[in-house]
Length: 255
Image 1 (cartoon, rainbow, N blue to C red):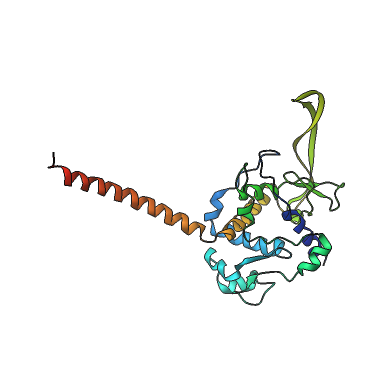
Image 2: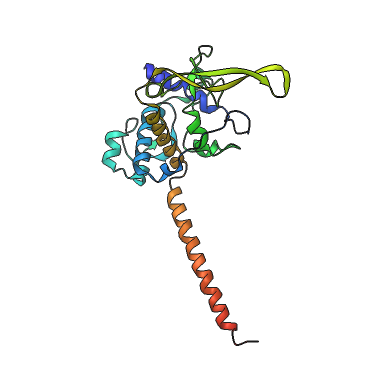
């Protein structure tokens, strides 16, 4: 029950707008090669079901669509099917929307296309989510005890804190470049205060897998579309050469 309540609070985070302007800290680049890594997508699916699907639905996705990332129906049933009975069911949650709104002030947003909706001037939605999930830090002034670098005053706790551990944000006071009489707080980095179950590198990899799955879920046919696009471009290039040579052969005797 404690885990469910903590996870439900996560809904408040993604319900708000993302920082999609050029202001704020720069977003880290999501490792795009994960999109072609079936093992990474499968691990991302596992993380999503265990840590996100408690309160966030993915109502436009069916469990059996994960066959596309190399999972069998039996594997889906044994490892991912906790909130439903059939692999053909939609990835919904049992949380009552009315109760959620009463408890938290907002209905947990559906995450089916969350990666596509968070794109901004600083990068893709995957870049935003990859940065967001790695920049939680302890802040005792917040109701949940957590804050986030790219989403200040975030309303959700850090649901992956057991994996990442706890860290605090380190700031330094510097002269305001626009007003020499003022001082501004500048973010300098994070300081680990409590270790998690994973090392920093392992947590970054796990986060990348989760974001890869969220990105894939927004458009499951994305990899097929890209491969088909490459084949079409190759065909057009070859066809252009053939057409050019045929045209030259047709007009060679005409002056």
